[in-house]
Image 1 (tube, rainbow, N blue to C red):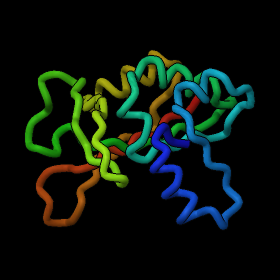
Image 2 (tube, rainbow, N blue to C red):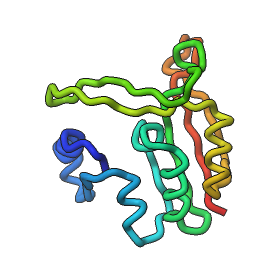
Image 3 (cartoon, rainbow, N blue to C red):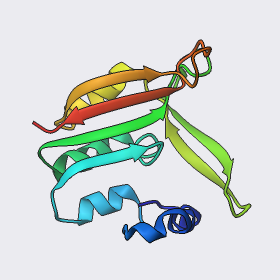
Image 4 (cartoon, rainbow, N blue to C red):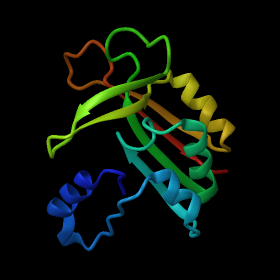
Length: 149
């Protein structure tokens, strides 16, 4: 699932043979309007981190089945050496088709993610500070898992 048509085309080109279903929609819209309970929700540098957290995390919590798992990774807020003063930023990016687009990003400290997840009704089970390589001094990725009680 992705709100970018170019990303969907790329996914179909790479993984179309798997019989997976690819949805061109926003995660928030899909989570708010679909009915089935989900055992797991995974976001890899995706909607979580680029969508206002309280709305999306609450939608995830509503859709997860009892004991369902949410796992996501976002760029680590300390990847540049300092935590941003404001968690919300807009970043211009070039899309694969050459067009430019502004991406909203929430760079939140790990404790802020834990609080947001708890407010959404989820229990955090792990927080990992990942490094791109062994010689990288600063963490580059934040990986968080949570469970619906």
